[in-house]
Amino acid sequence: VRVDDESDPSKATDNVNKLIKRDNVDVIVGTVHSGVAMAMAKAAKESGTLLIVPNAGAAAITGPMCAPNIFRSSFTMWQSGYAMGEVAAKKGHKKVVTITWKYAAGDENVKGFKESFEKNGGTVVIGGILSSTLLTLLVLPILYRLAHRPDEELEDVTAEPVHPQAAAASQNS
Image 1 (cartoon, helix red, strand yellow):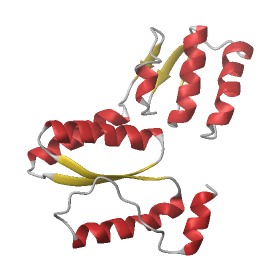
Image 2: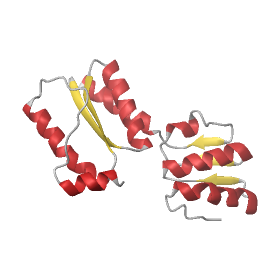
Image 3: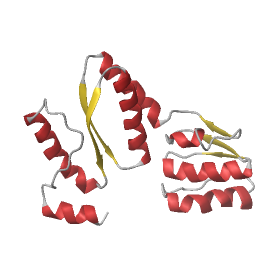
């Protein structure tokens, strides 16, 4: 039985419940989308249906939501970030800036990176979170500020969008 999850978390609960209750599946394999996989894990945990997560990187699936019937065959986003933080610190980098999209995978990746980087003597001077594709326009002012004041200890950055339409769009996203 196949179901297109459409990478849409709002449809995930209904889709997985149809597989479990209507189609009586014994095993569910999927998905690549962490939001969809979170809903799948919740339903699988409640029903006892075997769930194999081959790619979705949300740590909660095999962390707080873990159950004897839930397995992961790949990685969590935290793991890859943690490894990168250790390598960056051991290569001698002392200060870094992190920028990520505002979603679980980005948040977890940066948390893993920051934990490892700081454990190995580095400092994350700015942690930027972008909440909309149009907010990528914010990246340029942040990088400009860093390039012109590289020794300044910055804990938070607020930058004005470089285009007025970006400001309006970001408030609507």
